[in-house]
Length: 113
Image 1 (tube, helix red, strand yellow):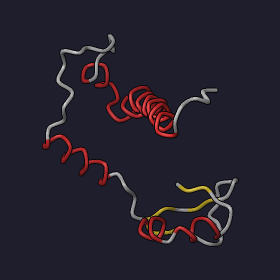
Image 2 (cartoon, helix red, strand yellow):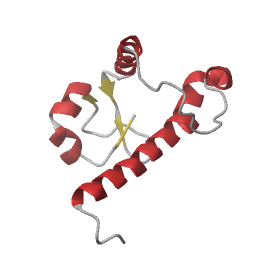
Image 3 (cartoon, one colour):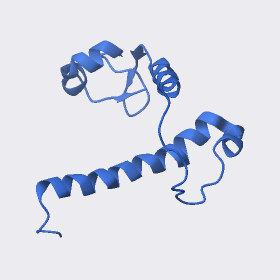
């Protein structure tokens, strides 16, 4: 579509699009479920970009968000088939899923929950 773009330009434009998709999922799906009825009060309605707002993130916020996110990680993941039954290969521990990807890729057709 834009044959004159360099590889770097293509990367940066794609990065903008993917960032927008992630923000859309975060604000329209994840945060409403996470915050529940408090969502409207805490987040509020979006009224467009405001250049006067300081967008930097405090160290305290990033630390708490980091801890919160890691606290949501399950230690053990069940593996199920299309009918919702456990598969014969069983589940796996988080570390095995992260550090031993062959366990996920090559052991049975399954969903994770």
